[in-house]
Length: 447
Ligand SMILES: Nc1nc2c(ncn2[C@@H]2O[C@H](COP(=O)(O)OP(=O)(O)OP(=O)(O)O)[C@@H](O)[C@H]2O)c(=O)[nH]1
Ligand SMILES: [K+]
Ligand SMILES: [Mg+2]
Image 1 (tube, rainbow, N blue to C red):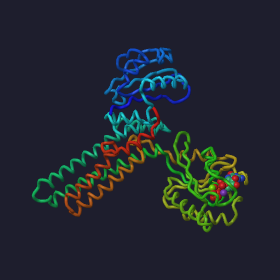
Image 2: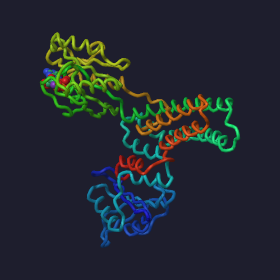
Image 3: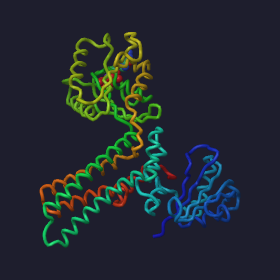
Image 4: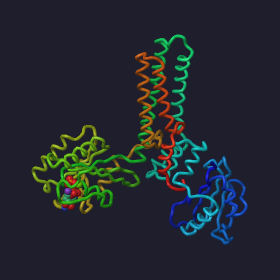
C-alpha cells in the first residue's frame, strides 16, 4: 500500500508572523505544484503565491522543497511558510486536503523519519524532549541525545554483547567439547565489565530523566496541617480538596509544576494518624508508600500555637518514622494565625498556605535543593529507556550467574541474547508496532 501524503501546521497554534505547513509523502511534489507553481531547487526558498482551487490567492510566502531521501522524513517534503493566522493556515490546510493529502497524526513525521532510517528512536524522542524542555539543563541534555550520544553508548554495549555471543555460540555450534573453565572465566570477566558500563549508562540516563520529568516531592503530615492547601498554593490552582474536616484527603494526588522552569512532581497525601475508617487507613498506607519513594518530603506542621499538645506529639512520632535516607524539609504552616515571620526559620520554612506568605522562600528552597546537576555526561532519557536498561541489567546478571556456575554456554548465550534485545528496544533496532505507537502518539501534531 503506498504511503499517504500527510500535512500539518508545524508552528504553534495562534497568531504569529509566520506559520509553516509541512507536507510529506509521495504526492508532495504534485500537491505543492498545484498550490504554489513550479518547485524551487532543492533546499532553496522561493517566494510564491499560494492558490486555491479556483486560482484565487489564499496567501503568499515562501516554499521550500526537500526531495527524499535527504529530507527530515526521508520522503519528499515541502514546507509552505505563510502568514501565521489561524484562518490563513486553515484555508491552506483545507486546500492541501482537497488535493489528496491527509492530516498527520501526532508524531507522524518523526515516526516516518524513524521508519525510513533517518534517525534512531532516542533521537526522535530527543526532538520532542528538546521542544518541551523546561530548563536550559534539560535542553542541553536533549541536544546531547539528539546528536546521538545516548544511542552511540547503547550501540557500543550492544556491539560488545554481540561479540560475546558470537564467541559463545561459535563454541556451541562447532566445538566438540564445551568451553572449559578457563574460557568461561574469560566470559564472566567480560560480562562483569559490561555490567559496570551498563550501570554507568543507567546512572547518566536516570539523571536525564529527572531533568526532563522533575523530582518527586511528597507533602506529608498530620491531618489538617494544611497539606492540600500547600499543594494548591504551589500549583497555583485548586488541585486538591480542602476542608476543615481532618481526614479529607484519602488518595495520593499528584500535580506537575514548574519552579523557574524546573519541572517538579508534587504529591499530596492523606494525613498520618492511627485509627480512622478502612478508607483512611488505606490512604495512610499509600501516603507512607509515596513517602518511601520520594526524592524529598515536605513535612507540614501547624505553627506551635496552632496545633494542640496531641498534635505536637503526633508530629514527633511522624518524624521518628520517616523513611530513612530521604531528605526532608519541615514546613511550618498557618503562620497567619500566630504572626510568626514568614520565610526561613532555622532549617524550616514558615509559610501560610492561606495567604501565600513565605511561599516564595519555599519555592527558592526547593529550587536550591532539587536542581539536578547538569554535567556534560547527562543524556535526556525517558522512563521506557530506564526500564529497558534495567531489564538488560537483569538479563546480564542472569548470564553472569550462569557463567559463574558453569551452567553451560547455551544458558549464558540465551541471557545475553535477552540483554541485547532489551538494549535494542532503546534505539529501535528491536521494536514492536505497539511500542512505536505508544512513543510517537505522545508527540504533538506537526512533529
Ligand atoms: N488560617 C489558616 N488556615 C489554613 C492554612 N492552611 C490550611 N488552612 C486550613 O486548615 C484546614 C485544613 O486544610 P487542608 O489543606 O485540608 O489540610 P490537610 O492537611 O490537607 O488535611 P487532610 O487532607 O484532612 O489531612 C482548612 O480549613 C484550611 O482552610 C493557613 O495557612 N492558614
Ligand atoms: K482537611
Ligand atoms: Mg488534604
